[in-house]
Length: 479
Image: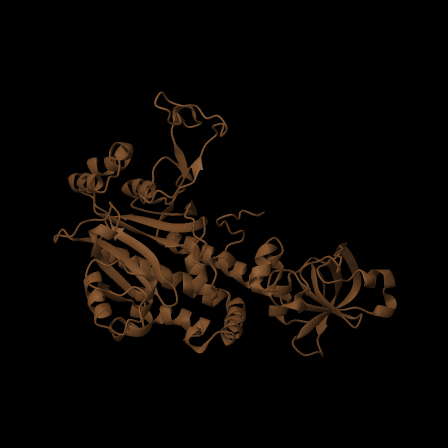
């Protein structure tokens, strides 16, 4: 029997006159002669030609959209349009039938993205989601490749944690207590001493604090894993379960942090452009078609490939928060009240519309904003000498707004404790974290990048639920 060969390899080789076996799913079957076969290795199908006169009629009836088949035969030059080679089948076997009356993915109907979310267990079989998830794979590989080449240690930080890294409080509780009759303390509170871990625990919102512990031993580490936020938000930008990339580097200051983040983003985008061009071209065309349905002012100014190359080939502009506020406050957009949130002055928390204005209208380049007011940033960020701002940095992208958030961390024990007390972060509970400032402290920095945010940017999709395999959102935890 011939060795199974993947469709992608056959189509990229362009060789003919050799025997192969292919296995995959039927995308279409026409004239009782031509099967379009897809095996997931590429969005492109291989045409299989069968001789209807020599094939059992009962078998032909079973060649339906979605059926899994195996075909063996000779690869020959194709006379038809759209493909250079095709498979002339000598044997054909149905591996799994697919009832066309019940199969919900009749691709000729062009199912909507909303409908496909309802059948997310089958949506991988469409061209759109085939392209998205091959890109997701390539991006994830590129993340590991980038850090591995720079000698970083990949650290698995805990998914179950007793600390709230961001102080946001919107966390999923992890418990084995009887919900109907939980144990109580004398004061009537739930007694978590009786729980599995002997204390209240949650699903993590970030691996950063634990990551810092690793950086203080290995120098450079990164985490890449699932994080969770119980934010009751049904927007197209929020998930309850998402993946975060969080490097932490000892002996890094803010400038080093910015340099690494810019190099990282360019590296992973470059990898996907080099290795997934077919998928990106397909997604770029999809975006053009989607844009045609929108009013002119909502259409993308740049095509998908153009947008990716825009990030790849432009130096990121670096400005302070204070400079950004001046630009925004004095912009025609602000003066003409075109912002939903008007910029009155220093101290404002920037919204996505402001971030996008800086990138898309003002600089026309990706922007790194630094030195934010301490009031709107986390307790662990290093205070500047002005005592008003912290050594934070956010990277802003076209179409998205904030892509990366990071900072130089406060390495001084006394200053960190003071900030924790000011912001009501429990000092006792984080004594393990403070130990890194007690024993051999050093300047260090890091950043976080939401993987699905990056996926939205790279694929051109507009809803975050379409770039993760099984989205977890309020009132929805299917599959």
